[in-house]
Length: 332
Image: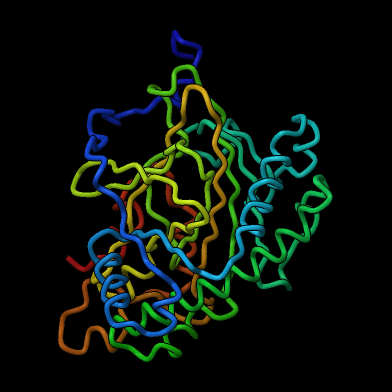
């Protein structure tokens, strides 16, 4: 325990707050989904550039209603507002990933994080474990069902446009992610008096294909992405979805697109909610550079089975940063 009462494992070890960008004009790209669906060349080019240069963008006009987005965030907030004993009724089982967990309850070797989480796997529906789906608030299950189904549709459309930008058949590329798992992590980061000394979520990349995140629409800029060696806070845009490129897309694109390193910081006064969905590839496809992408260039990554890849993901430490998983697949 540090002198300020914060557990040592929650301290920002090795994180220099001075490296947070002070350039308020530096913002992640903005992509209009409605233009992508109409195959506007300029919007496809913006998507390509965002995936290549940033690995993250904010998506607007995506088709999910403001009412549904706000209801999902409200239901998540209402769940986390409950007494601890009520939330513990949905606690993760030993060696399990679904359910509720506090910051101090994590996997072996992971640092303590300043927050609470609820992790659920809503899709495919056949794998749902309703034991972990809260019944309070009473609207949670219906809201979450609708939200996850509609969000998966957005994700599939984005993946097909990503395939098109990579020069591969869009439907064939999208099929790699059909009937794959969609995991959703709901996070609550409470305020901390010593917010400059703790971390909500350590720097990492996501081991999935793409991640789609919604967060509070206020000025609490808790999500930060690494760009050119600096941490760039993402300013919330009302009803936007923040889309991050994951490690699978980086590998499949042979490094053309970059998975984005990101972290979550906490504030001294206000708490923060975020809800992130992880869309992975299906289990019967290997993970490696796409053949059409490496026809005329050398592969930069190995090809491994989905099971081997998933095993590496499960062993990955949350504070590995950018190279925690991909270092095992790079061809040097």
